Image (cartoon, rainbow, N blue to C red; front, side, top):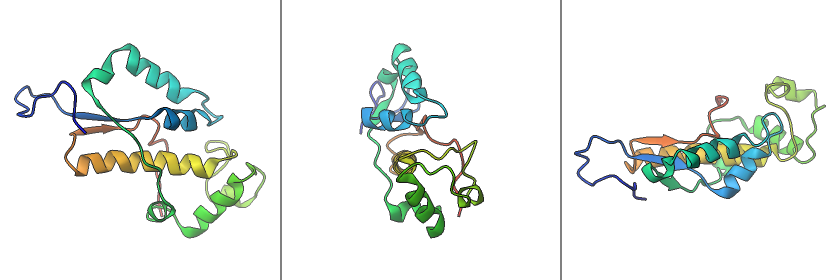
Length: 147
């Protein structure tokens, strides 16, 4: 990954920025019914303001179940996978996991979580690999994972 517009010697003082993006990722993020098309709107603004020429675009990876298990309990992941199949919003155990009004249960929620978590891990890896000083995942960070 290279950062367009930035020199190798970094004498300009500009920070190298990585933007985690792919059309498929935006489509997945737009599927969340709580804020429909939010990811597309944000990306459209980034394009309209010409910000893409100042950032490198990094394609997100999808988090594996093993990666997700580093931040979530097995029982939570099993529950998320189970309710993801049909968007079962009536499962009483969902409330125990903080799912409900603020974090609605929708069909495909497991895949959504894997996509957003993977994008955040992609951003973190870009920082660790020193490919950038700033990494942005606009569709991530709504809620904090915890084990």
